[in-house]
Length: 100
Image 1: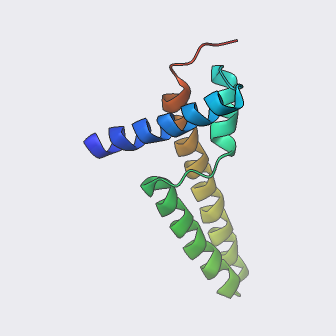
Image 2 (image 1 turned 180 degrees about the vertical axis):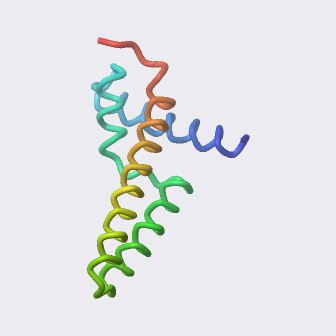
C-alpha cells in the first residue's frame, strides 16, 4: 500500500510540475485529459501492456477462426481493464484540483 501511495505521489508531482511549467491545466478536466492521454509507466500499466502483447502475439499465430475470435475478445477486455485502471489513477492524481 505504501508503494502504491508513493507512486501516485510521484505521478501527481510530475503532472503538477509539468502543468505549472506550461501555465495551463490548472483544472481537474485539463489534468484528467492530459493524464488519460499520457502513457503511464507504472507497474500495473506495464503489466497490462505485457498481457496485451502476449494476447496479440497469440492472435497473430492463431489460424482457427473461433480461437482467434476469443483472443480478439480477450484483447478487447484487457484494453477496457487498462482504460478503467488509467481512469482510476487519473481521478486520484487530479482529484485535488478545482472544477472549471
